[in-house]
Image 1 (cartoon, one colour):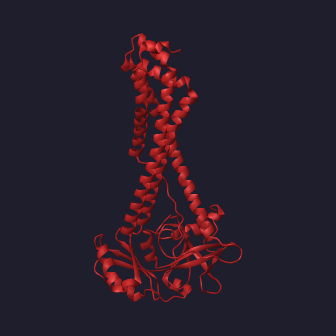
Image 2: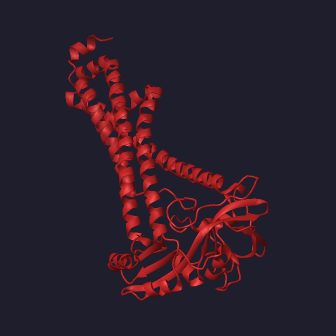
Length: 420
């Protein structure tokens, strides 16, 4: 018997029992699709966080005042004079609400110089308009999520040149200011730029009636200086400051993502285990149904090894077909899950941001995960993961088919022929 005959005999039984074969393959498809969909989500989230941190860079640290006094220009100059510091940027953040075209949108107010804004964002990417001037005259630079709020289904709500009303806690009445520019979507987790109104530092101090600011963005000469600088700043200011470095955030994120990936891999592994049990069960049924046929094959000269190979090849076909379809289904499911999660985050942000008709709502100020940006990401696929998923599907199917194939190969021809 040649390989072509073995393939035909293996495929024939699968083709005759189409419904059963389809359900068996579907179990493999679900297992493989689960692996790809879940792994790609964690990889996508990790890549999004790293992209978010790339604007700050590994040499950056965010120094936040935890006291009532805040920082002054003298504090920024003092930090800038420390050894190993390349730059120190003054930033004022706070809560705000924007009223435009009848919509109240909660926002983070960020006040810093145009140069400081570039330090925060890495690069200033404008949708249209221009960046504000570093003067006390309040002029707004709107984040993409402010101009295109999720509540309007992506339609533009704020336009260049129009005036919007800005409300801040503790101040009676709103402040009318022109919108000079709109930023592109950043999707940033650390600096909530998409849900922010940005202006110059003097203007933000006047709007919020502050004479100090609450954040100093520090950039070190190299990554090795970051921990040393963090220690120096802590020695100077003690418990009145909180220091977070990009390296710390990345380590925490990597640790969390690794744990989530392990958990999801276990869940996907369980689905493949269920698929293996199903394959074994179906193939055992096939062996019982084909007992007489096996007896005929043995009586005309088929060896035990050839019978074993026929059933193993049948399991191989199930694994290959299920693996290939599972990869396609997993890729499709990955984009679907990312879209669902992104829309859910947008809806949550919109519900938290937009007030009812009885007043104005305020969002949270400051930087950090969950500080107001809408979390967007896309699934990330690795060629090694796709190939590994296919190999796992094939190996699981073969492992599940070993015992049924062995049972078939050990049937005695005379006993098998008696079965009708």
